[in-house]
Image 1 (cartoon, rainbow over the protein chains, first blue to last red):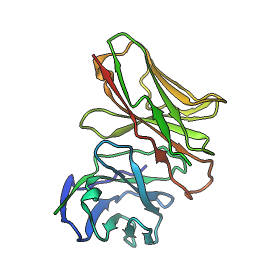
Image 2 (image 1 turned 90 degrees about the vertical axis):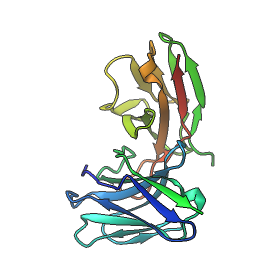
Image 3 (image 1 turned 30 degrees about the horizontal axis):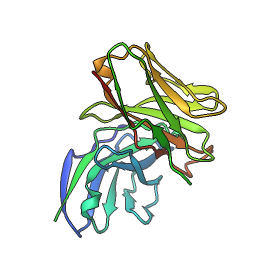
Image 4 (image 1 turned 90 degrees about the horizontal axis):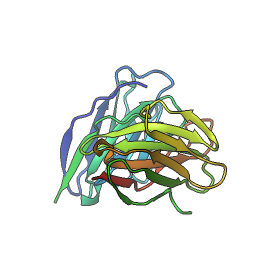
Length: 110
Length: 116
């Protein structure tokens, strides 16, 4: 699985969009980009995933650059409950085996 | 539809005792994964099981740790002769059978093991 690089921490004002970047310059053609988050030591929660097209669901949007070397997770209207560690994971595996990095700690502030 | 159920949520063991952590996957899920999270660290994959089979145990410590997912009943992660370094949160995830990236893994709330 390709390695990912994320900033260790970010702040966001409540109600504003949170844009979390992820670099994955060595991604292969068959690897997907997954995002999970972990709120205060709870079990990780799936957010979204994609291959090359941008994706949107009820939680977030995923923007993948055309060369697929980086992506951005967008939480359109961050709330205090979105404070968590966000993990960007790149994998070709279609199982639930995931390789977690250090993630980005997002702090949403009032 | 209940989520992934792990029990106990908290477990305290003395050094040298055995710890048994249980995981009941979501209904209809036949794949189970165990992860360990040491204090202030990220999650580390340990083992991937299907019913009655270990598929990938590349993250399991070579000694004292074992896992099973029997035909009936929950998956069990067993740690023998626990040491203080085993103190961590252990998370279980499950997923259904799939042939493409059409679904995701669901995680339980974890078991927090403290070795005293």
